[in-house]
Length: 473
Image (tube, rainbow, N blue to C red; front, side):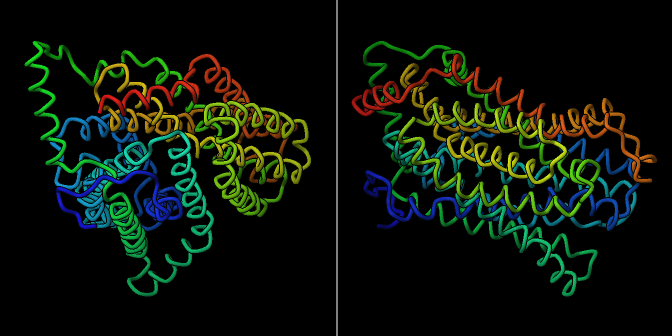
């Protein structure tokens, strides 16, 4: 079946989507991990900027990135649909720009202000260029799925590939940087690696583009349908009033509940991962255990991604998230009770990562449920806007990481000169352990409460709304 404007619409999830949807997110994990693990190192050690300059670069870039996080879904839902569909087209149009923009984030061009401006501009533009197809990618879950089971199948497949990407990156990422250093030199090795991994992401998104063929109206089909609907409304003397997208938000209380509850898992994820090295260095007194913890928790994440579909089928995606949050709270509290036993902490916090990954796998399916409810209530498809809002908790989580970790260290009495001499106090060990376990436990416990009372879209309700929307179409 070709990419013609008159292509027949598919029904049901194809075998290729069930197995391989997420290969683009596999590449996405590789691409973003270069920034996570090496961007600050590049700025200080390779580009040789002073610490105040490095702080300025990272702060400006992250603030702009967070400020723009809501806009990508609006772009998808308001721009005229392109040849291959409103969402699917973006999987092939923009990703190929990312390698070229992203590479300049890791290359110092010239000196002085110009070098700083180029890196900041490359960081901001590369993030814009990958966030738009990122939102389009998860929006296609809703376009291709007819049932909650279908949405969960695609969300689970995507989560498996994401988790595999994190595991493989731990082995491949540093090795590729070393190989690139031998080819283009150390100063350009990070830029070359960023280019290669961004190209891997773009190729994966192109694979998604092909897999989703036939699951969404083409641009011409959507435009024609919209013309017919407008003509029918005029014939009936009806006109839409107000901003349709704004109405989709103001009439959807479940979306607010989900977004706030979603923040809990990101507080856990970013705070626990950021403070882990402090725990293993100053509490366990064995820094090498950090890598062991990352490996075990990542492998459990792969298992959780695979099992999430079964759990959601039995309990529903909503209930799976609630149960997972409660389980995380329990194992994290136990982790604090045993904070003087490093292997107990590794096992318990890795179990928390297992349940956290399960909530990650359910996330796109739950936002898709919000999109269905919104269309049912308003008659307007705002899938891009709603799926795009899933970015906001993630960005807030990134900001909270620095604030909460710094607060934990300050309360614990962390002093670099003292700890470098090997001197630690019970107060310091307890404070770091609380940051690793108790604070994330409080966050996810609150997340469970918010999901219970603030997100009441059950499986039966979604099936009812979906059936009604099919009748309307």
